[in-house]
Image: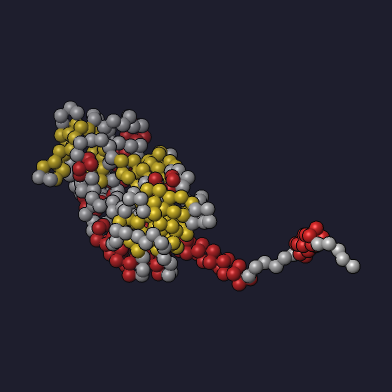
Length: 351
Protein backbone atom coordinates (compact mmCIF):
# COMPACT_ATOMS: atom_id res chain seq x y z
CA UNK A 1 0.00 0.00 0.00
CA UNK A 2 1.31 3.41 -0.96
CA UNK A 3 0.88 6.72 0.83
CA UNK A 4 0.90 8.90 -2.29
CA UNK A 5 -1.08 9.23 -5.50
CA UNK A 6 -0.33 10.31 -9.04
CA UNK A 7 -1.98 13.73 -9.19
CA UNK A 8 -1.53 13.94 -12.97
CA UNK A 9 -3.49 10.79 -13.76
CA UNK A 10 -7.23 10.79 -14.31
CA UNK A 11 -8.42 7.38 -13.19
CA UNK A 12 -11.31 5.47 -14.67
CA UNK A 13 -12.56 4.75 -11.16
CA UNK A 14 -11.65 5.97 -7.69
CA UNK A 15 -12.82 3.61 -4.95
CA UNK A 16 -13.27 5.34 -1.60
CA UNK A 17 -12.99 2.74 1.15
CA UNK A 18 -10.77 -0.33 1.26
CA UNK A 19 -12.98 -2.90 2.97
CA UNK A 20 -14.46 -6.04 1.44
CA UNK A 21 -16.82 -4.10 -0.85
CA UNK A 22 -14.20 -1.65 -2.07
CA UNK A 23 -11.46 -4.20 -2.68
CA UNK A 24 -13.86 -6.58 -4.41
CA UNK A 25 -14.91 -3.77 -6.73
CA UNK A 26 -11.30 -2.73 -7.32
CA UNK A 27 -10.32 -6.30 -8.17
CA UNK A 28 -13.10 -6.69 -10.75
CA UNK A 29 -12.45 -3.29 -12.33
CA UNK A 30 -8.70 -3.91 -12.54
CA UNK A 31 -9.32 -7.25 -14.19
CA UNK A 32 -11.46 -5.31 -16.68
CA UNK A 33 -8.31 -3.30 -17.50
CA UNK A 34 -9.60 -0.13 -15.88
CA UNK A 35 -7.28 2.30 -14.11
CA UNK A 36 -8.32 2.12 -10.46
CA UNK A 37 -7.29 3.99 -7.33
CA UNK A 38 -8.41 2.82 -3.88
CA UNK A 39 -8.26 5.39 -1.06
CA UNK A 40 -8.32 3.49 2.22
CA UNK A 41 -8.65 5.22 5.60
CA UNK A 42 -7.56 2.02 7.34
CA UNK A 43 -10.45 1.81 9.82
CA UNK A 44 -12.47 -1.32 8.95
CA UNK A 45 -15.64 -1.77 10.93
CA UNK A 46 -14.84 -5.37 11.89
CA UNK A 47 -11.28 -4.68 13.10
CA UNK A 48 -12.18 -5.50 16.75
CA UNK A 49 -13.37 -8.98 15.76
CA UNK A 50 -10.88 -11.83 15.81
CA UNK A 51 -12.48 -13.74 12.94
CA UNK A 52 -14.93 -13.25 10.08
CA UNK A 53 -17.57 -15.91 9.48
CA UNK A 54 -19.95 -17.17 6.79
CA UNK A 55 -17.46 -16.30 4.04
CA UNK A 56 -17.47 -19.44 1.95
CA UNK A 57 -13.93 -20.74 1.45
CA UNK A 58 -12.50 -18.34 4.06
CA UNK A 59 -14.55 -19.29 7.15
CA UNK A 60 -12.94 -17.99 10.32
CA UNK A 61 -10.37 -15.81 8.56
CA UNK A 62 -9.10 -12.86 10.65
CA UNK A 63 -10.63 -9.69 9.14
CA UNK A 64 -7.32 -7.86 8.72
CA UNK A 65 -5.80 -10.91 7.02
CA UNK A 66 -8.71 -11.01 4.57
CA UNK A 67 -8.20 -7.34 3.72
CA UNK A 68 -4.44 -7.75 3.31
CA UNK A 69 -5.05 -10.61 0.88
CA UNK A 70 -7.62 -8.53 -0.99
CA UNK A 71 -5.25 -5.57 -1.34
CA UNK A 72 -2.53 -7.83 -2.72
CA UNK A 73 -4.90 -9.44 -5.22
CA UNK A 74 -6.22 -6.11 -6.48
CA UNK A 75 -2.70 -4.70 -6.73
CA UNK A 76 -1.57 -7.74 -8.75
CA UNK A 77 -4.00 -6.62 -11.49
CA UNK A 78 -2.82 -3.02 -11.41
CA UNK A 79 -5.02 -1.29 -8.83
CA UNK A 80 -3.28 1.47 -6.89
CA UNK A 81 -4.04 1.51 -3.18
CA UNK A 82 -3.14 4.45 -0.96
CA UNK A 83 -3.61 5.21 2.71
CA UNK A 84 -5.64 8.30 3.44
CA UNK A 85 -9.09 9.64 4.08
CA UNK A 86 -11.20 11.17 1.33
CA UNK A 87 -13.00 14.15 2.87
CA UNK A 88 -14.74 15.75 -0.11
CA UNK A 89 -15.73 15.19 -3.70
CA UNK A 90 -17.14 17.43 -6.40
CA UNK A 91 -18.48 17.03 -9.90
CA UNK A 92 -16.35 18.54 -12.64
CA UNK A 93 -17.88 20.73 -15.37
CA UNK A 94 -16.64 18.52 -18.17
CA UNK A 95 -17.76 15.31 -16.49
CA UNK A 96 -16.15 13.15 -13.86
CA UNK A 97 -15.22 13.93 -10.29
CA UNK A 98 -12.50 15.45 -8.14
CA UNK A 99 -11.74 13.72 -4.83
CA UNK A 100 -9.88 15.58 -2.09
CA UNK A 101 -8.01 13.83 0.72
CA UNK A 102 -7.51 15.04 4.27
CA UNK A 103 -3.95 16.15 3.48
CA UNK A 104 -5.18 18.34 0.62
CA UNK A 105 -4.07 16.12 -2.25
CA UNK A 106 -6.67 15.61 -4.96
CA UNK A 107 -7.27 13.22 -7.83
CA UNK A 108 -9.78 13.02 -10.68
CA UNK A 109 -11.93 10.09 -11.74
CA UNK A 110 -14.50 9.31 -14.40
CA UNK A 111 -16.57 7.30 -11.92
CA UNK A 112 -16.74 6.86 -8.13
CA UNK A 113 -17.40 3.74 -6.07
CA UNK A 114 -17.98 4.71 -2.44
CA UNK A 115 -17.64 1.89 0.11
CA UNK A 116 -17.01 3.86 3.30
CA UNK A 117 -19.13 1.61 5.53
CA UNK A 118 -20.78 2.72 8.75
CA UNK A 119 -20.14 3.60 12.38
CA UNK A 120 -21.61 1.42 15.13
CA UNK A 121 -22.95 3.84 17.75
CA UNK A 122 -23.01 1.82 20.96
CA UNK A 123 -25.13 2.30 24.09
CA UNK A 124 -23.27 4.40 26.71
CA UNK A 125 -22.88 1.61 29.26
CA UNK A 126 -19.42 1.25 30.85
CA UNK A 127 -17.65 -1.75 29.39
CA UNK A 128 -19.69 -2.04 26.20
CA UNK A 129 -17.27 -0.17 23.90
CA UNK A 130 -14.24 -1.83 25.51
CA UNK A 131 -15.60 -5.36 24.92
CA UNK A 132 -17.12 -4.63 21.49
CA UNK A 133 -16.43 -7.39 18.97
CA UNK A 134 -15.15 -9.75 21.66
CA UNK A 135 -17.95 -10.67 24.06
CA UNK A 136 -20.22 -7.68 23.37
CA UNK A 137 -21.91 -8.67 20.14
CA UNK A 138 -24.82 -7.85 17.88
CA UNK A 139 -25.02 -10.37 15.01
CA UNK A 140 -25.84 -14.02 15.84
CA UNK A 141 -24.80 -15.17 12.38
CA UNK A 142 -21.38 -13.61 12.95
CA UNK A 143 -20.84 -14.70 16.57
CA UNK A 144 -23.66 -17.01 17.67
CA UNK A 145 -21.74 -20.25 17.18
CA UNK A 146 -18.85 -18.97 19.29
CA UNK A 147 -21.14 -18.42 22.33
CA UNK A 148 -23.48 -21.36 21.74
CA UNK A 149 -24.96 -22.94 24.85
CA UNK A 150 -23.46 -20.20 27.06
CA UNK A 151 -25.20 -17.55 29.22
CA UNK A 152 -26.08 -14.60 26.97
CA UNK A 153 -27.65 -11.27 27.91
CA UNK A 154 -29.63 -8.99 25.61
CA UNK A 155 -29.37 -5.27 26.42
CA UNK A 156 -32.61 -3.55 25.43
CA UNK A 157 -30.97 -0.48 23.95
CA UNK A 158 -33.10 -0.31 20.81
CA UNK A 159 -36.51 -1.15 19.38
CA UNK A 160 -35.46 -4.64 18.25
CA UNK A 161 -34.64 -6.05 21.73
CA UNK A 162 -37.38 -8.68 21.88
CA UNK A 163 -36.62 -9.74 18.33
CA UNK A 164 -32.94 -10.08 19.26
CA UNK A 165 -33.72 -12.17 22.31
CA UNK A 166 -35.90 -14.57 20.32
CA UNK A 167 -33.27 -14.81 17.60
CA UNK A 168 -30.34 -15.50 19.93
CA UNK A 169 -32.42 -18.19 21.65
CA UNK A 170 -31.58 -20.33 18.62
CA UNK A 171 -27.96 -20.56 19.78
CA UNK A 172 -28.46 -20.93 23.54
CA UNK A 173 -31.26 -21.74 25.95
CA UNK A 174 -29.80 -19.42 28.63
CA UNK A 175 -30.93 -15.96 27.55
CA UNK A 176 -31.74 -13.01 29.81
CA UNK A 177 -33.30 -9.87 28.36
CA UNK A 178 -32.24 -6.77 30.32
CA UNK A 179 -34.99 -4.18 29.99
CA UNK A 180 -32.50 -1.41 30.85
CA UNK A 181 -33.99 1.93 29.77
CA UNK A 182 -36.56 0.47 27.37
CA UNK A 183 -40.25 0.88 27.99
CA UNK A 184 -42.41 -2.01 29.03
CA UNK A 185 -43.00 -4.79 26.52
CA UNK A 186 -46.44 -5.77 25.28
CA UNK A 187 -48.41 -8.76 26.55
CA UNK A 188 -47.79 -10.70 23.34
CA UNK A 189 -44.06 -10.06 23.59
CA UNK A 190 -43.96 -11.25 27.22
CA UNK A 191 -45.86 -14.37 26.18
CA UNK A 192 -43.36 -15.08 23.40
CA UNK A 193 -40.41 -14.60 25.75
CA UNK A 194 -41.95 -16.86 28.39
CA UNK A 195 -42.78 -19.53 25.81
CA UNK A 196 -39.12 -19.62 24.78
CA UNK A 197 -37.83 -19.63 28.34
CA UNK A 198 -36.26 -16.17 28.12
CA UNK A 199 -36.06 -14.34 31.46
CA UNK A 200 -36.59 -10.57 31.70
CA UNK A 201 -34.51 -8.54 34.17
CA UNK A 202 -35.91 -5.14 35.16
CA UNK A 203 -33.70 -2.24 36.14
CA UNK A 204 -31.07 -0.15 34.41
CA UNK A 205 -27.75 -1.75 33.47
CA UNK A 206 -24.89 0.36 34.87
CA UNK A 207 -21.81 -1.69 33.98
CA UNK A 208 -20.40 -4.93 32.66
CA UNK A 209 -18.37 -7.07 35.03
CA UNK A 210 -15.02 -8.30 33.69
CA UNK A 211 -12.66 -10.77 35.36
CA UNK A 212 -9.28 -11.77 33.91
CA UNK A 213 -10.19 -10.04 30.66
CA UNK A 214 -13.41 -12.03 30.32
CA UNK A 215 -16.97 -10.82 30.61
CA UNK A 216 -18.51 -12.45 33.66
CA UNK A 217 -21.69 -10.53 34.43
CA UNK A 218 -24.05 -7.60 34.05
CA UNK A 219 -24.46 -5.15 36.95
CA UNK A 220 -27.81 -3.48 37.54
CA UNK A 221 -28.40 -0.14 39.28
CA UNK A 222 -29.66 -2.09 42.32
CA UNK A 223 -26.20 -3.63 42.69
CA UNK A 224 -27.34 -7.05 41.54
CA UNK A 225 -24.92 -8.83 39.22
CA UNK A 226 -26.38 -11.41 36.86
CA UNK A 227 -23.73 -13.81 35.50
CA UNK A 228 -23.36 -13.64 31.71
CA UNK A 229 -20.55 -14.61 29.33
CA UNK A 230 -21.71 -12.51 26.39
CA UNK A 231 -23.92 -9.45 25.96
CA UNK A 232 -25.85 -8.53 22.83
CA UNK A 233 -26.51 -4.87 21.98
CA UNK A 234 -28.25 -3.07 19.14
CA UNK A 235 -25.97 -0.35 17.81
CA UNK A 236 -27.29 2.52 15.79
CA UNK A 237 -25.87 2.05 12.30
CA UNK A 238 -24.74 5.45 11.02
CA UNK A 239 -23.53 5.63 7.42
CA UNK A 240 -20.10 7.15 6.81
CA UNK A 241 -21.49 9.47 4.19
CA UNK A 242 -19.37 12.62 4.35
CA UNK A 243 -17.95 12.34 0.83
CA UNK A 244 -21.38 11.54 -0.58
CA UNK A 245 -22.98 14.47 1.24
CA UNK A 246 -20.42 16.75 -0.39
CA UNK A 247 -21.89 15.58 -3.71
CA UNK A 248 -25.44 16.24 -2.53
CA UNK A 249 -26.32 12.68 -1.49
CA UNK A 250 -27.82 12.83 1.99
CA UNK A 251 -28.27 9.61 3.99
CA UNK A 252 -31.80 8.43 4.69
CA UNK A 253 -33.33 6.50 7.58
CA UNK A 254 -32.88 2.73 7.56
CA UNK A 255 -35.97 0.88 8.76
CA UNK A 256 -36.41 -2.74 9.80
CA UNK A 257 -39.87 -4.00 10.75
CA UNK A 258 -41.06 -0.42 11.05
CA UNK A 259 -38.22 0.62 13.37
CA UNK A 260 -35.44 3.05 12.47
CA UNK A 261 -32.11 1.37 13.19
CA UNK A 262 -29.79 3.89 11.59
CA UNK A 263 -29.02 5.51 8.25
CA UNK A 264 -27.84 4.50 4.80
CA UNK A 265 -27.34 5.96 1.34
CA UNK A 266 -30.09 4.91 -1.04
CA UNK A 267 -29.16 3.18 -4.29
CA UNK A 268 -30.61 0.77 -6.82
CA UNK A 269 -29.92 -2.99 -6.51
CA UNK A 270 -26.63 -2.59 -8.40
CA UNK A 271 -25.46 0.28 -6.21
CA UNK A 272 -26.14 3.20 -8.57
CA UNK A 273 -27.13 6.37 -6.73
CA UNK A 274 -29.27 9.23 -7.99
CA UNK A 275 -26.09 11.04 -9.07
CA UNK A 276 -24.90 9.67 -12.43
CA UNK A 277 -21.42 8.23 -12.14
CA UNK A 278 -21.57 7.49 -8.40
CA UNK A 279 -22.09 3.99 -6.99
CA UNK A 280 -22.17 2.72 -3.41
CA UNK A 281 -21.65 -0.77 -2.00
CA UNK A 282 -21.35 -2.48 1.37
CA UNK A 283 -22.57 -1.16 4.71
CA UNK A 284 -22.85 2.46 3.59
CA UNK A 285 -25.73 1.27 1.41
CA UNK A 286 -26.96 -1.70 3.46
CA UNK A 287 -26.15 -1.72 7.20
CA UNK A 288 -27.32 -5.34 7.52
CA UNK A 289 -24.81 -6.68 4.98
CA UNK A 290 -22.21 -9.18 6.21
CA UNK A 291 -18.67 -9.41 4.82
CA UNK A 292 -19.45 -11.82 2.01
CA UNK A 293 -22.51 -9.79 1.02
CA UNK A 294 -20.47 -6.59 0.95
CA UNK A 295 -17.89 -8.26 -1.28
CA UNK A 296 -20.66 -9.41 -3.62
CA UNK A 297 -22.16 -5.90 -3.68
CA UNK A 298 -18.76 -4.46 -4.61
CA UNK A 299 -18.46 -6.91 -7.49
CA UNK A 300 -21.96 -6.12 -8.75
CA UNK A 301 -21.35 -2.36 -8.62
CA UNK A 302 -18.01 -2.78 -10.40
CA UNK A 303 -19.59 -4.68 -13.28
CA UNK A 304 -22.19 -1.93 -13.72
CA UNK A 305 -19.52 0.78 -13.57
CA UNK A 306 -17.49 -0.97 -16.25
CA UNK A 307 -20.55 -1.30 -18.47
CA UNK A 308 -21.30 2.38 -17.98
CA UNK A 309 -17.75 3.23 -19.02
CA UNK A 310 -17.98 0.89 -22.02
CA UNK A 311 -21.10 2.76 -23.13
CA UNK A 312 -19.32 6.10 -22.81
CA UNK A 313 -16.17 4.82 -24.56
CA UNK A 314 -18.29 3.49 -27.43
CA UNK A 315 -20.17 6.77 -27.83
CA UNK A 316 -16.92 8.71 -27.99
CA UNK A 317 -15.44 6.24 -30.50
CA UNK A 318 -18.48 6.59 -32.77
CA UNK A 319 -18.27 10.39 -32.61
CA UNK A 320 -14.56 10.30 -33.46
CA UNK A 321 -15.15 7.93 -36.37
CA UNK A 322 -17.83 10.14 -37.85
CA UNK A 323 -15.63 13.21 -37.67
CA UNK A 324 -17.10 16.74 -37.79
CA UNK A 325 -20.83 16.67 -38.40
CA UNK A 326 -21.80 17.87 -41.91
CA UNK A 327 -23.74 21.12 -42.31
CA UNK A 328 -27.40 20.83 -43.07
CA UNK A 329 -28.68 22.51 -46.26
CA UNK A 330 -30.22 25.30 -44.19
CA UNK A 331 -26.95 25.90 -42.32
CA UNK A 332 -25.04 26.03 -45.61
CA UNK A 333 -27.55 28.58 -47.01
CA UNK A 334 -27.17 30.80 -43.92
CA UNK A 335 -23.36 30.71 -44.19
CA UNK A 336 -23.53 31.58 -47.91
CA UNK A 337 -25.80 34.55 -47.22
CA UNK A 338 -23.44 35.85 -44.52
CA UNK A 339 -20.44 35.58 -46.85
CA UNK A 340 -22.31 37.28 -49.72
CA UNK A 341 -23.51 40.02 -47.41
CA UNK A 342 -19.99 40.67 -46.16
CA UNK A 343 -18.68 40.89 -49.73
CA UNK A 344 -21.34 43.40 -50.72
CA UNK A 345 -20.49 45.66 -47.82
CA UNK A 346 -16.75 45.45 -48.37
CA UNK A 347 -16.40 45.65 -52.17
CA UNK A 348 -17.18 48.31 -54.85
CA UNK A 349 -18.88 47.03 -57.94
CA UNK A 350 -16.90 47.65 -61.15
CA UNK A 351 -17.91 47.22 -64.76
